Amino acid sequence: MKLRGTMTVKENHLFIGGCDAVELARRFGTPLYVLDEAHLRSQARAYIEGFSRAYPDFKVVYAGKALLTAAICRIIEEEGLYLDVVSGGELYTALFAGFPADRIVFHGNNKSPEELQMALEHGVHRIVVDNLYELELLDAFTRRSGARASILLRVTPGVEAHTHSYIQTGQIDSKFGFGLAGGQAYEATRRALALERVELAGFHCHIGSQIFDLRPFEAAVQVMFGFFDEVRRGLGFVPRELDLGGGLGIRYVEGDVSVDPKFFAEQLAAAVRREAERLGFPLPTLMVEPGRSIVGEAGTTLYTVGSVKEIPGLRTYVAVDGGMADNPRVALYQASYEAVVANKAAEPPSQVVSVAGKYCESGDMLIWDLKVPPLEPGDILAVLATGAYNYSMASNYNRIPRPAMVLVADGAADVIVERETYADLVRLDRIPARLRDARDEAAAARDRAVASSDRERRP
Image (cartoon, rainbow, N blue to C red; front, side):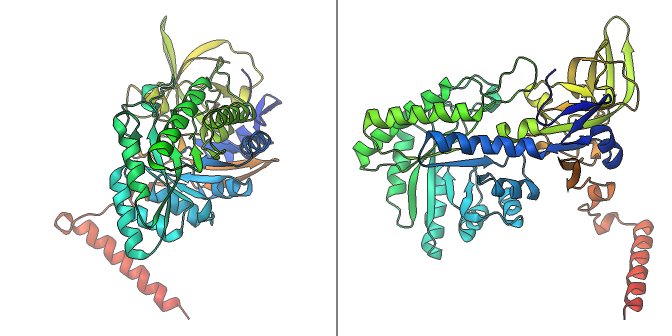
């Protein structure tokens, strides 16, 4: 098994970012998300360097839905990337972190009026409009407020990437965007161009996720330039921007061959240049939205092994203290992962086990048929490539608190997301008056007494 990023093995222990994974588990508890800062930054820089060499005018837009925290926003800003958000909560996180609003692209297939107003008030760089309802809302808001909205229209190009059906988004039958078939995208363009305070900069498409074959991207470029030509001929509009989305795959397990961002930049830029020259278009600003390929392999999740259950002649189940609530991708997408026993990292595998989670679901499995050294309770299992869509999709299923996240670099570890507590789980719970009893009155009396005592002690 090939380790990722800055991972090394020293004295039988796995190290990440110069930190002993076993010591991280002891210090911060498990489950624990560990993020390799150097690897994350390296991937971001590879995109910038690749497009800098291959194309004159570009924007690399980090897809925040893969993993977004305030600290991540700071790193993305420092590396010179733009940021893609898909909700008011992601936008709020970015603004809380001080991320420049004029470098934020706001996506989403059903943005609420409140979310759109929030985006306009803060002056985000682009709003990617997904439907006519959003276009009408933006028209009304901008006319009423005097603000201007700069937008891209999301187009479904009819290109299907060979990935899980749940993460294919470019095909005609999709909840996202305006279809080219039937003239929906053309009509949306006509309407957008007629609006007084809404400026159409260009078009966006996204064909799916976890893609290794670049040919679908090249096909999408051809389709989008064909649409460019259609709106130029019919409406006199020459798009200034082309956003080709993200979706580049990463290495989860042996056999996955991830694409180098620099090679991706070269191939994509070449395809855009070819089509622009063929149809006589000036080169548009080229935008891409990598998320998983920047942060995915930078993440590792540490678990503590608990029970070991052997079914003779069939299977050995090893249970860990996390599972489908901190990594729902296995249940959702039948995703596959590899793992290392962090406290036995140099020992050869001698058994095959299946790693089960602790949640009350028979489908709560993390890895089937994992080759490992002999496992026992207390061992630390490090599941690799969990940086994307693990924390961001985590839940409190079974009322279990979500894990902490630490950022590691050069032997230092810093908490960037605190571990939730049991108190956090009930913080927003409310008991209606008709369900209250003496227990609640006693608790209220204690709270009043504490508050009164605090007031008396104040100077």
